[in-house]
Structure formats: structure tokens, C-alpha cells
Amino acid sequence: MTSNYREIAPTQLDAGIALPDDITLTRIGNQYTKATLITPAQTYPELKSWISGHVDFVRSLYQQDRVLLFKGFSPFKERKDLSEIVGLVSDSKALQYAEPSTPRTKVLDDIYTSTEYPKEQQIAQHNEHSYSDFWPKKLFFYCEQPAASGGQTPICDSAEVYKLIPEEISRRFESKGGVMYVRNFTEEMDIRWQDFFNTNDKRAAEEYCEARKMGYKWQDDEKLMIYQVSQAVLTEKTFGRKVWFNQAHLFHYSNLNEEISAYLIDVYGMENLPRNTFYADGSEIAVADLDRIRKAYQDAMFRFEWNKGDLLIMDNVNFTHGRDTYSGDRSLLVSMSEEDGISNYNA
Ligand SMILES: [Fe+2]
Image 1 (cartoon, helix red, strand yellow):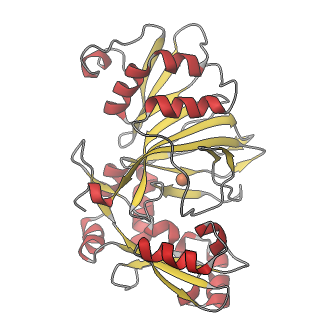
Image 2 (cartoon, rainbow, N blue to C red):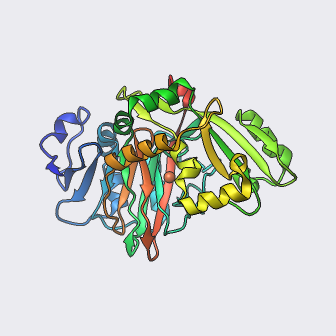
């Protein structure tokens, strides 16, 4: 479902900001999730120079639409062009990827590869770092090489997801005080505690947990359990909307296929799974409720095709992202900026 956006855009831009005449804006998406597509009208300007020359416009458009997809421009000449763009359209510098959920490779100081996760497995929708009490407000995804097939980055509007989740379920999360994330780091599964804390020093890891109000317990010399309670919902400030903002469905063992989760439960036991979620009070979350949440994401989801040189700039509080399965090689660069955290919200 698309519509010509050009007519309404100028009235919604900040005063004094004109719509450049060498691009076309198109609203794309579905009834729940919408994005703004920016394409060159005739020529194919280089993406970095075009954005550099229209920073106020891009910032103003972002302020109202929150998901900007640049397509059809000439690609960046080098990876550091992305760093430059991140700097230009962000209110603060790019962030380091602390407390990783999954492995990423740093390719420049503030640029990472997208999550290195098996291509035959889908990555469920999530707001980046929403299992924590701090997160980036803005995300940048740049397509260096699209997959041979699949590999899209579907997105959902988090406020629509909240509305699509039955009230009975969201109320349960809110009244129980949010989500408890439990991780068990072992040598053989998932990421190692040394990689999560970015140190080999146990005491340093413990101090980090203490400072971040995470619980921790050494199960033996190398096995570390950590747990943390975080928000289920945020009231977003600019638009005043309630957004579903957690990864209960993604960290829960039911996110894995049945064969794998049955194997893990067999090997580690329910309490020692590499990752799992509970309500904040430690009580179990019903799989049926998580499946209903997954359906809300499924219903709200919008996906587009990646082409080389495409850039997605998106709001990490108002929107979620995920990754489809794919074949062939795929290279997406990721950067995150504008640190935000629970202290800025009345959760
Ligand atoms: Fe992500």
C-alpha cells in the first residue's frame, strides 16, 4: 500500500525546511507500520553527499516519520561514510555495542556487522537492547550486499504491536513489573561471559553486574548466571504512545524450534537454559501468551527488499526490526546512536 507523499510532506516539515526537488518521497508500509521511502527523482546522487547537503531536511523528516529508507542513490564509497552520516543526523555520537545479545564484528570504531546469526534461522522482531535499562534511540542499517534471496529486515511499529496484544496479556506484564531476563553463560553455548563483559577478569564482571543492578551467580568456575529485570512497556515521549518494548518472546526458550528447546531443556534443565525470560517476580510466562505476542508482531510487520547502497534510519523505541532467513552472502552494516534509558521514561 503506497500513496504519494509529496503533497502532505511540506506542511509537516519544520518551519523553514523545504522539500528538496531532486527526490521523491513515498509513504510505504501497511495499516500498522509505515516508513518513508526517499528516492532520487532523476539522477543518482551519491548517498553521503546528498544527505550531507540536506541534513536539516533529513532530521526534520525523521522527527515526524521515524523510519527513513533511502533507495536508488549511489552507494557509499567507503565504510566510514556511514560513520559520517551517523554523526550528521544524530544528536550524539555513535554508541559502542555493550552487553551484546549476539555476536557482531566491529568493522570501524562505531560500525558493526549486523548480527552474525545462522542464515537459516529468523531473528524475531525486537527493539535493540530493550532487555536492558539503556539502549540506542537511533539505528542505522546500510546494505553493502543483499542476500541472494531473503534476508529482509522487517519492521513493526511498537505502538501498534502494543495495541495488537490483548490487554489481558499486556496488563499481566505491566502489573508484574516487567520482564526478568536470565542468561547462563557456558563455554559451549551462546556467547561466553568474557565476550559479554568484554573482560577475562571475574571480579570486573561482578563489579559490572553490581553497577548495572544485575544479579549474578557463579554456578562453577566458568559458568555464570546473570539476571536482570527490565521494562515491558514504555510511554514514548514525543508521540505520547505506549510502546511494547521488551524481548520476552525472543529470550524465552519457546523462541527456538521445538527440537532445539527440548534438547536444551534436557541437557541444561529448565533453570539453566542459556537464556530464558520470566515475569519480573520470577513467575513463568505462558508460552501461549508469548505466541500471542509473536502474532501481534506478525500482523504489524512490514518488509521491503534490500538493494546494494540502501540505507535505513530508524527509531529504536517506536519501531522494532528483525531478520528473515536468507541464502547466499549478505552484508549489512549497523550503527547505533543517541543513548537513551529508562530514567528518561515513566515506565
Ligand atoms: Fe537487532
